[in-house]
Image (tube, rainbow, N blue to C red; front, side, top):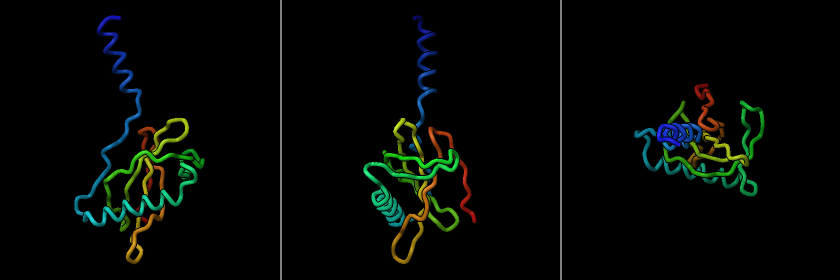
Length: 132
């Protein structure tokens, strides 16, 4: 195989691998203590909602309940319409990568997850609106 074919093969491989989006949005104006509280609320919610090693969430695009395994929480937190949003990476049993957004709200002195939304699968982002 010549060098041009090897380069083309390598490029095809790189383009075919789903990207793990490690660059989650992050609002630098949110205090570190709030970010830690949001992350703690997410961890607690995921732990309490996981059966076996699977977290279940409804995927509005496929109209199916998907069973996912947690891979990584993102450190970024943003403020959307008075609630905080942060995300995590999950995998389904087929190896599809799901980006799940967690909507977190302060309730008295504690933070709690009020919704989990499929924000994307295998790098394809889903749109939703939290402005209402």
